[in-house]
Length: 167
Image (cartoon, rainbow, N blue to C red; front, side):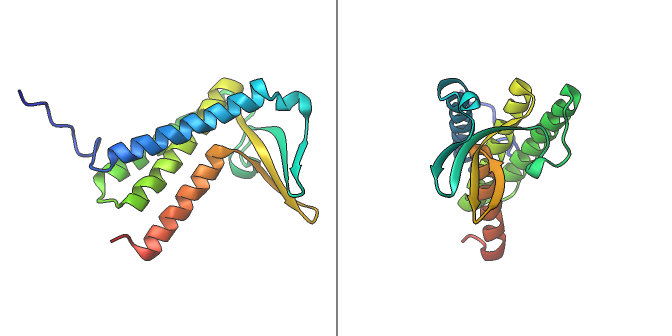
């Protein structure tokens, strides 16, 4: 008996790799956040110095990158969740419609997994849980999390792929 064909825009040749990377990113991000909040209890510890340039601290970001467009209301948080879900769906469509190489596939999947990980935070705690504070010579970079690192790595991968192209 033949199985029904899946639409190509939904499940391309790279979709299994993308789903694995996105889901792995999301699980690692959420597991780390759970551990930091409920096991390590970073909230009660305050700022913890790890190295001369890295501290652990809890910051709830109710905006987007660099706390832009702060949304303190539940409605604002749900708008940002909806935005993350729509953008992730569009990226999934791009991934499945275009003839993407492995680098673009992994890059898009990292962005999708990171965006959905941060969206889950918005639903559960009313903002994104950030923990890593990098600093040097009196300059403090923004506080970020694993999902943010995945999104940045994905964007770097997309930029590299667009400049180099994958064979």
